[in-house]
Length: 465
Image (cartoon, rainbow, N blue to C red):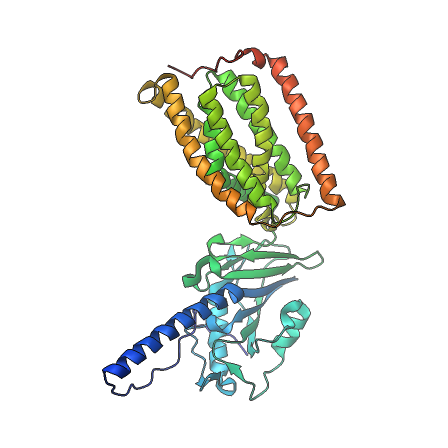
């Protein structure tokens, strides 16, 4: 069937029509009130459960010479404004053709394909209803065949169950242009609703990605420049919203005086976290559900340690060494932001990896550019001398300690790892690298004379007293 423009859009289906209520006495009103409360609570629980498990729109984007195909499946309950005809508690499938037409318009309104930034307009579209038990969207070929088959008359599909399937064809003006996709479906669900896209370029290996409303326009086959720019922005955003990383960076800067000390410590932190970030990107990190909470706990512990060291007294050579070791831990934390978005790199994985690291460093430099003047101002006014250093570090300890205990509790609930040979090999590799890095940092501090920058128990002085 051909597509037809309309104002329909993805929204949860409306409920059944209300029935007339009989008159009732006080006892009946109380009973009815209790019944309504139970039904509302039950419906809310069922609805939350349903959205959690099934708030996914599955789609294939197949690129052919001079055209792009969108083969898409969405849960039936998302089409509130389409108003499918009902007969009792079921969809009246024999009378549903006009509603399917409106659903096709909703697909084209809320899932938009672009070619080189220009919205594509469909030339043909076909759609149908499907049972919730249907599994034809496991492959593109099965999905295309299924959409082309008519729904058998008399098929029973209950309200709020089943799917709307569609195949929409978009002509393109060029071959090999950049294809992008954007979803604005079901705004009331926000990022709970996922668009799972399997991108199938002609003559190349396909890729899968998950797109949400907040992602905006997402390139399915980005150029290297677009991929790099996107990952630089991602790296900057990741560091500037990573409050634990920023607090660790603040701890590093609090006791330091002079650009030589600041540059040496920040450079070691940069090299260390870049090292583990790259290793994680190439899957050279421990696996298992326990590792992310372990890293998060270790990051919080690193802040606690650095703040306590600020209070007790800092030796610069030791700070350089500890910064390098903790920096490797923070690199694993940075890698989570990268791994979640690697799907948008297209075929430019190395470029995107490098760009993400560049973004991390740019964001870090921006944070330092703000922290240093603020610290200098505090030292000259509110927090003078060593007392000010202790007060500021104590505030940091208080915050990071709560983070550490909360994260340790989450880590404790994780199942203990049962490492195999591969896991032991990876662990041995990282232990060796840590020891090598520690030796290298010790040599570097001696080579640069940083071991003489602070003596014995004498702490490094503040930037300005």
